[in-house]
Image (tube, rainbow, N blue to C red):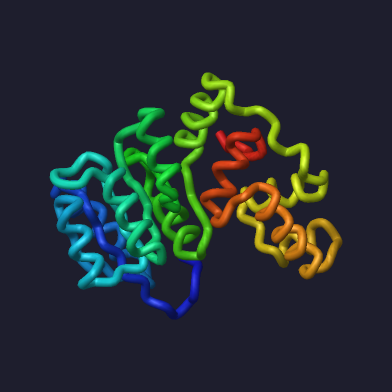
Length: 221
């Protein structure tokens, strides 16, 4: 797992299916820099646990007693924006996926995923990036096309800025983008500031939403 090599990350699990939680904990214990801070079976207890445990990452289901995963995500992002959130659920309903994305969770993968994708998702999220599985992104793309929201809002972007957005969505760092495009890191940083202004986004999740809505996010099958 990437991120800060020697840092130990605390993870809180919120899920009311004990058998699944036990399996998830077994997988997480195989990750060298992950420590399980605790587990709760409902959204209300999850909020209390976040105050006490101060986790780096919350892994939550959607359907739980008390606060749902969607409501929990909204509350956590409102009160504790520094806590990263990975939604791990069987739900692939377009409305739910859309609500989670709008709530600015850093990631969403389905429970039928393999260990490697789970590890990749956690690694990217703890590395200050985002991870939405290809299936989840495809669900969002279908919704956007049906609602005809994919109108080009990119007219204010230059060709270079559009290119940089696509590379950001492919998890390239500023240094890697500079090397790939044969420009300086300072130039990349300037482009990124301009992109944030023009797209009116504050976070990587916000930029991801913009990229999906404007067909700039590549979907890996």
